Length: 408
Image 1 (cartoon, rainbow, N blue to C red):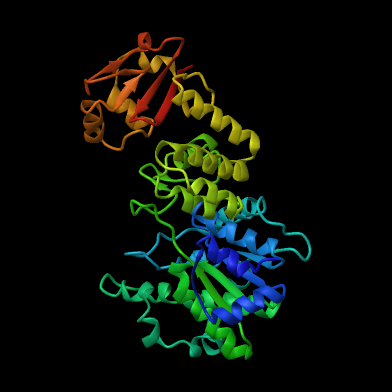
Image 2 (image 1 turned 30 degrees about the vertical axis):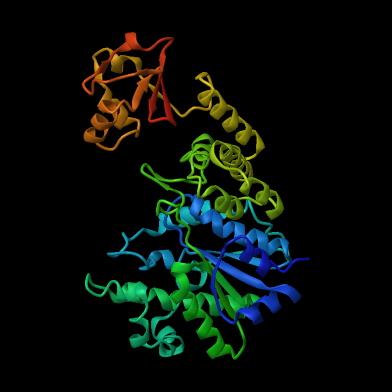
């Protein structure tokens, strides 16, 4: 079997690791227990998290044992990495709920049966720590001077950095030590923005346990336009279908930049590299075939084949000039709302199609908004019930964003 280190490298995941040759050799000859942490900052994982899940899947397929670590404890503090100010503190009930939702979602993608994989929650040990015992055993191994050189802290010095946040690295490092002692976990994997935190744990285990453990990060993915993958003007692309429908996820991937499609195929799908190489030969309009395959494969793996087929049919319906698909994003509104005229800008804002009236006015005056395939040119347009043929209308923003409004 091909070494999973090479698989991750060839597909474009790898960013940094400690002792590359040693790590590759270990992954090729023994079953390694490794972990990835997920701070429970929302009630759903995002498409960005799906990259981490794919890494875990590749490694589990190669015979390694993943630990999905839910951050029920570390979320209480919040990772300062990449933040200009302190995170909003979350209450225990919300954190517990979010962690449970993460557990349910991650369990859809990985095998957590006996001997195959493990789910842990660092609330189980971090919330029980005695402060004095912790700083005596763990704190003595961390140099404040060195910690302040890491970007996650250095970039916050002018705005202000609390001791509360400063302790995050110690908590995450202790996670590695705890999992090493309980499960003989020898590798932590995470995004490149976690490199300093991961190194903290890696060094702590080596010091206290006098054993070789390893750290590996993968690249934080951005689109060719420099936008973090899985982010849109409307917000994140969620794995929860109630927050982001399968159709919306399909369209996000179907509409990716030509420069991103092959990269996303390698990272987000499990298609073999030789199959992806065939799509890499496509150019121009032919790349749309590759984009459909990308969108279909990701939606299929996250939401199931039926949802992927429905999203594909809806996409074909829209781009084929037919607007009769039930899978187009839709909103039901009370018909009496339109007894009095409703401004198009107010309606589009309520539907989440625009954020500001100025954005809407610009779109409309540039010919970027249509209702039932008829372009509108007046930002002051008002709609009443008479405008809803058969009790519904379809608003199109730009070339690819559709939304159906249904009267009830």
